[in-house]
Length: 221
Image 1 (cartoon, rainbow, N blue to C red):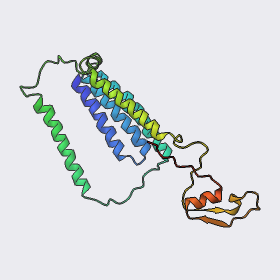
Image 2: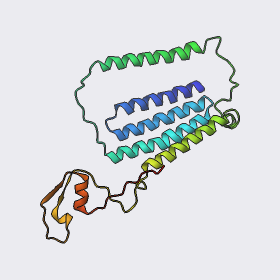
Image 3: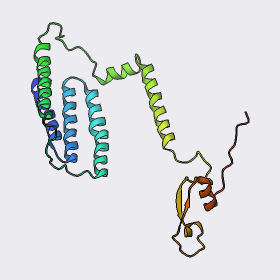
Image 4: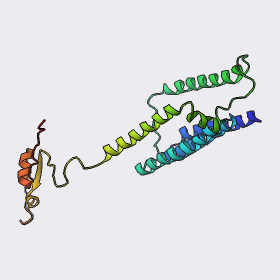
């Protein structure tokens, strides 16, 4: 029974992967990739690893694919046009790599199972949720807490880098060096005049705009 389920889900994964590569529309390719992730989750269930299967569906088929589809729709990526292939040598290379992959899979399926070193009884509970939870909070508690601290530092660092302002006072205007202004921009009380006034330095731009310089403070230490 497990062999039939393996063949079914493996065929679904291969079919969705071929559909993902062959689709010209990136949105359809993303949907096909969701099928690949779900098929792999089903394979994990047959291998007695329900936790990995749940993570596969929740994180990859859920959160990551939502982000991928959001980016595709945000960029408005259109369907790819068919163009003549430039590197024709990629076709035999791809066929050769696929043959090597199938040869490795055949070796694992037929020869590893018949090896005397392969355990016959499935007494391991490595993939179960209870074993993973007990391992994280007992044996691997310190690496788990260090990872959480690293993630917290990454979040704080991202927020610090993304924060705008705070480095200068709110009433300070930053003036670039070389730029041009219209006369009515410099003096709104005059009639509309689009004559360009060029400032070649920051000091000259500050003088034209009437922006006061920020006094440079030196450390007294």
